[in-house]
Length: 204
Image 1 (cartoon, rainbow, N blue to C red):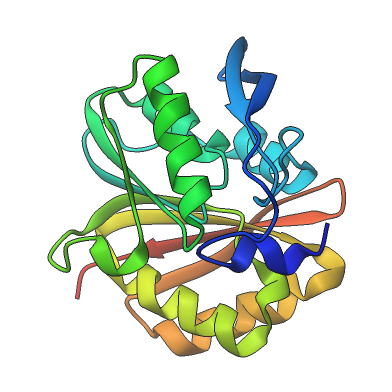
Image 2: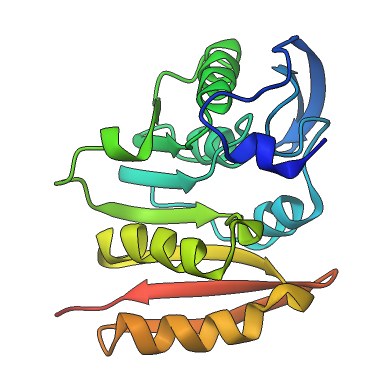
């Protein structure tokens, strides 16, 4: 499938739902998936590295998954932090529908799916997890990250997984320069060809 499909609000390929069995938060989960989204057949390698390496998200407050797909990151956040509200954001409306459906399957009432413009502007996030869409291009990626990372709450952390050969090190340096002195940008781990970057917001 042309990866451009999953960057569109309405994928051109038919929406045919099918079962998906995956392990999330240490247990096998019976979910559903479809074509026209990112990694429709399971948890992709980058997301698997992220979920294996990150510490638990904040137990309360607002959490964010940038680019939710069928929901592996948002669902894991919701499972690990049932007292928090998880905002699952995507430009692909089919992805939002699948994430919402999968949250219902798991009985997770703390997941909120939304298009980027529909997330209330006053919300600040205690934790952000993302496997950001590197293939949308550098400029669009930079705009995406600068839209969301400044919305970290004081003391909040963002965790980004980026393939090493797709510019993870240059992205780390760029983020440090763009976000400025109240943020700490560090390489937290390297695994299976991916870098895990941690962005921490300090006090202003």
